[in-house]
Amino acid sequence: MPAREPDFVLDIFLQPGEFFWGDATTRIRTILGSCVAICLWHPELCVGGMSHSLLPRRKNQEDPEPGQEARYVNDAIDLFLRNIRKMGTAPADFQVKLFGGGSFVGDGSNDRSVGAMNVATARELLELKGFRIHKEHLGGIQGRNILFHLWNGEVWMKPINVAKK
Image 1 (cartoon, one colour):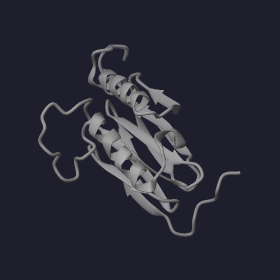
Image 2 (cartoon, rainbow, N blue to C red):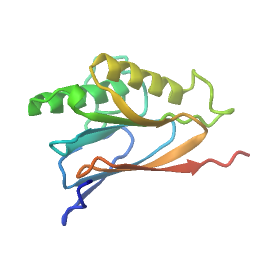
Image 3 (cartoon, one colour):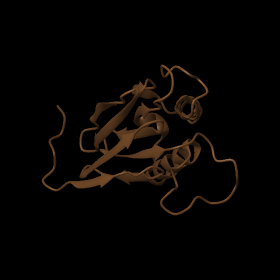
């Protein structure tokens, strides 16, 4: 039975490039287009986080700007791994839910769009690092409004339809 909403909830809204890790008193929200959100949740500890990444991989070795640590999918996955190591847990202990990667040109099936490359990079690196994706809603010609409850691991996704002109 899913845990009920706590009396006190820390409500976090992620802007593009941001990352947040929290506990069972946390709700994380974001809105996606071609970006991807990775949601990680530990079902026994009720901890986890979300990233909102704009691009697949950082090409230079410079440190990310403050507040933009998750701008790139590869950096976001490194942030998750740091938090997991601090807790003494393993990637396989977490449920992963992956969202986004929309395309707003053509029919959304272009595998060279930024959205498609974000999705491909996220899938590749998550698998390489020992994560398993439990659920996903990816691609297409739509945006997504995401709401993630860390007290029970539920992720609510509402499509944002993009009117074509």
